Image (cartoon, rainbow, N blue to C red):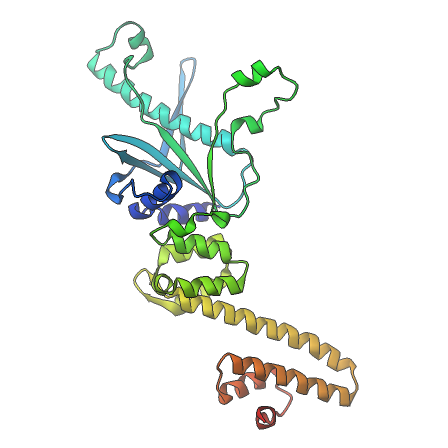
Length: 336
C-alpha cells in the first residue's frame, strides 16, 4: 500500500495537477486556483500527547499536503490516496484534520510564549481571542469505481433508538471522496489527470480503452512517467511494467499509445493460445480425419485474424509455425 501512496504523492507533487484537481472538484471546472497559488507544506504531522507530567509525541504522514492561496488567505488542502475502501475513513480523516489544527495552535502558542503578550483566559488558552486558524480540507482520492464506505462520521455511529434530540446534538464530520473509476467530470481536467482518470475508468473494457487512447492520442503519445507508473499501479496492469522499457522515449516520457497497443496485442495472442490449447485437447480425442479437418479450420481462423491485424504473409507463416510446430503448413492453400 505504501508504494501506491508514494506514487500518488509523487504524481500530485505537480502544482498544476493539484490546482487542476481542486478547480474541477471544488469549483466545477472554473479556473479559480492557479499553479502559483499552490505551495508545498510539510506532510509530517506531530501530535503532542500529555499524560500528567509525561509528554509524548507521535508522527503521522499524509500523502499530499498543500497550502493554497484563495485571494489574500490560505487554506490547507490534503489529498489521501486510497486503493481500497477504508470503512473507518471519516474517523481517520477527522484525526488527520485535527492534527493539522493542533499544529497551527501549537505554533501560535509558541509565538505568544516568546512574546509574553497574553493575559487571563487568553494566557490559559495559549492564543488570543480574535485569532483564527486556517481551514483544513481533506479529499479522499479513491482509485476504484464504487466507494461503499461511510462518507460521514454519523454513518459510523449506532444512533438507532436514540431520541432525535440526541442525534441532532451528536457532531457529524462529512468527508469528500473522489471515485476515480466513476468520476463524472474527468473530461473537465486540463492536465494529464484526464488521461489517468480515463484510463482507469476504461481499464476493464479493452475496446473502450483503445477508443479512449485513440481519442487522446496526442496526450498518450508522450505521457509523463509518473502518470504512467500511477496508472500501472492503480490498475494492477503488470504488462505495463514490462512494456515501459520498450516504449520509453527519453527522460520521464513514455509512448503509452504503443504501450496500450502492445498490451492489447499480448491479450489477443494469449487468447489465441488458450483457444488453441482447448482445440488441441479436442483434436487429441478425435479420429485422424476429424483431427486434420479441425486443424485446418483452426489455421484458417488464425490466418483470417492475422490478416485483419495487417500482418504480412511472412509474419503469418512465422506465427503459425510457433503455434503448430509439428505440422507442415502450405500457407498458399489458406490464402487461396
